[in-house]
Image (cartoon, rainbow, N blue to C red; front, side, top):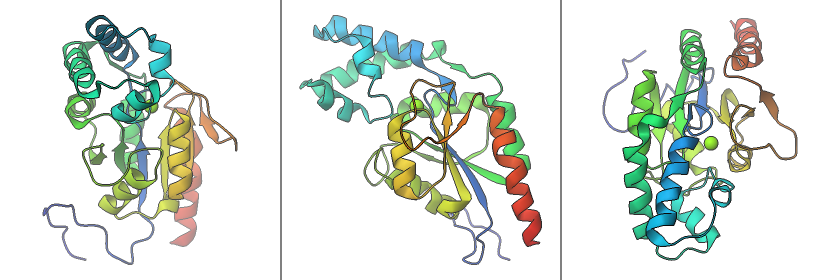
Length: 231
Ligand SMILES: [Mg+2]
C-alpha cells in the first residue's frame, strides 16, 4: 500500500478499496444552528435594500445557493444583497452554536474509521470559520466555490466522494432540507434526515435521526456488522 500524497486534489483510496465509509454532512441545521445568524443577516438586507419579504420566505429555500434563493424570491440586485448578507453574517457569526452532541458523534465515526466530509451551499468564506470551530477532521469540504452545479443537483456530493475515494453506496448524507434529500437521491447516496434541523423530509420517507447522537445507533452497529462479515 502506498502512502497517500498531499498533492491537490487529495489522492483517492486505492481502486480496490470499496469498503471505506464516509459520513457527509450539511452545515446549516445539521452541524450548527446558524438560524440566528441568518435571521440577523436577512433583517439587514430588509433594512438596507428595502426588501419586504419576511425571513420565513428566505428560510423556506435554505439548502440552496444564495443566488438561487434570490432568483426564487424574485430579487434582482443579487450582488449588492449578497454583500450585505455576507457582511452581516460575518459580523454575527458568534451567534451560531453547534448542536449538542454533534462533535462527540463525529469523533465516534472517525474512531470507527469513517471519513468525514461537509457538503454545503454556504459559501466558503462563511462556512470555513464555522467549521474550524468544531475541531473535527473533515477530509473534504464542498461549497459552491467548487466545480459543478449546486444542490439539489448531485454534483457536490459526488465530488466529495471523489475527494474521499468512497463509493456512493458506502456513504451517508445527513441533511435537513428537501434539497439535501433530492441531492442524495440523485447521487445514489443513502440519506438520513436530521430532525433537529430546519426542514421536513419529503416522500419517500427517509431514515430520520432525532438527535446527532442517534446517528450512532442508526449507522454504526449495522455498518460494523457488514464490515465484520466481509473480513
Ligand atoms: Mg441545512
